[in-house]
Image (tube, rainbow, N blue to C red; front, side, top):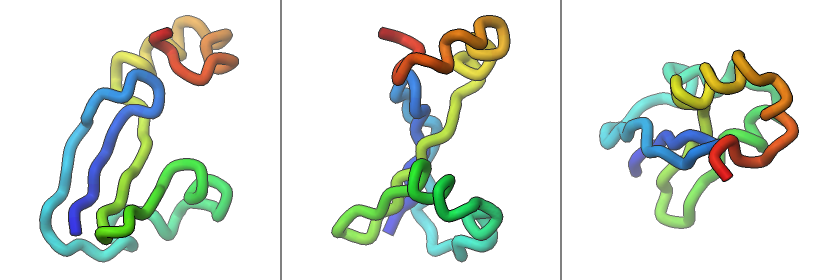
Length: 75
């Protein structure tokens, strides 16, 4: 089981954890059920895929809040 992080906007791979980790240690228990549904998906092989925001997209969103209306910052 691996945990894969990728940017929800530009789809850049942010990182991967290949070792066994409790979901509480990653902060998943701090998410509301709607946030968890929106950000975390579980693959049939046991892998977990987490959508976060990379620094570049975060910076672009801070400078241009109207970009929040788009599904992907980079079209």
